[in-house]
Length: 248
Image (cartoon, rainbow, N blue to C red; front, side, top):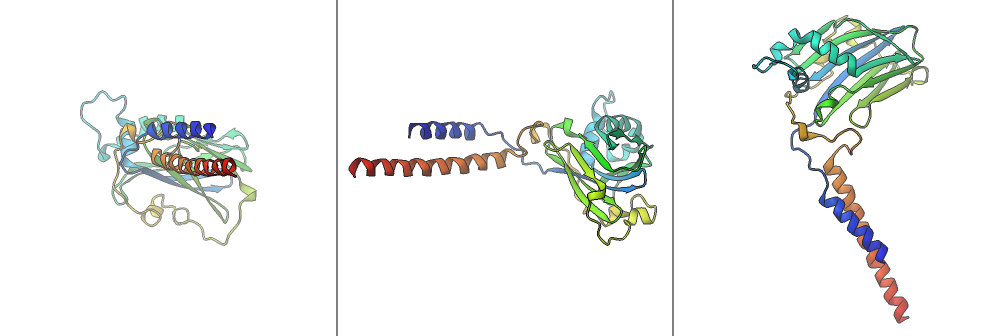
């Protein structure tokens, strides 16, 4: 009985100190990838606010950057990208090709990046690692669709998940046509149909937990609240049972 009360007190303390979550909307970036032989091609659609905030850091200029300035910052973003995104084939790092496209696309209100990685051999186990924008400590997620032959898989990258290990021969092969952006050779064709435009965000630093923390303070608080309710019920049942034993 006393032990249950101690646990209940601890849960109440956790609820009191649960981290606050910003009301700002979650930033979302996406990518489409395709494996063709030894090449892995990517079409990224980055949240504009995240890209601008990344490029703003370390600048001496007083004027703030706008979407129209993004293309001119290609070299600075390339260095950032190389530090935080990689592709490996069977444990061997694949070489990144040059940026084909890097610019703000007003029709989808996203920053579009297209490029390819060249692997030393046709991949068997493909590994994608991404910590893009996680240093900004904002609520966000990267959602990626990968195409291999007739298989289409989706992966998520966030504060809890940084790596996707994909065993390509094990993927389920479905009867799917070639993706539009590969069939036409148009790196931005898919952006007009595969992504619903939303306004770019400029989130604040307090909007998301640090790596290793729960993904949402609100969800964490609800879990603790539910746990405390269960403990209260257990304490009540134990108390009733004890009174019955004493009077029985």
